[in-house]
Image (cartoon, rainbow, N blue to C red; front, side, top):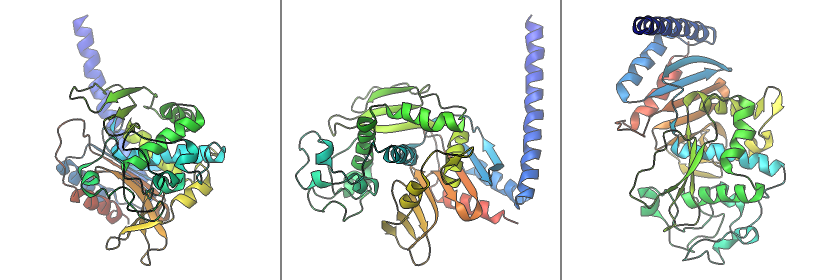
Length: 355
């Protein structure tokens, strides 16, 4: 019996090697057909192995031309959760369950003391989507920079000033749940994961006390509500997702919201969300739309491509002119070392591989 199991394991290793070899050869052929050099993609692979990244996928015209690392492993996507929430809000807007012109006061949104002021309560859903709420209340999962540069309360009118603040994003999640009367992770399963036939997302979610020093096991969940009730009533809606599922989501957006001839996310919603409402880095020509970051044209008026990062080391990128989706991941759930500057170099290597 033990001998038989050993033989099966050896066969499994052999079959795995054969499968990987076949997949690599298939990817090389696909890369050639799509106009990308397999040799230059090998350069990309070697670079990735030196950076501390854990997985990467490049999809061109709906076909994978490059896949590296464990693309089925789920781990935190950090701020890339915002595009996922974007898709669900767009669907809710189309269903007339959310009106983006409604204010926090009209929606009954309030927070812990010090509570929202009359000025802050005038912020509209649209302002939150653009990260222009003017609400500078503390929020769950705030980064050091968010805390450091957080403007003073009531210092800006809603809709007038861009500041990347988790209060806006967390509150949007709460509004979505309130208006649809469904949990956010269930909404994602029903509206996105099932139609796209995602392989790894199952909708398992838990609540986490972010103020507690005790660690919570998140290894088996797809998402978690991170509450920090000392800061805000609203949690951060964190997703854990595999690279291959995230690539499917990216392809949905490259398809203008269409999947298998069905409109999943309204095209009008994608169009209006990928317009630059703010330019926060003129030198690099980077702007912000609605829950998406934008690479802009030289005149800073239009979007060339759009993306979102997580901790500035993960990436979901949509490149319409190249008909390309790029997913780049670093597993931050374990000890890691990654130079943020290497992400730009990685993306450049992809474009350098174009024949």
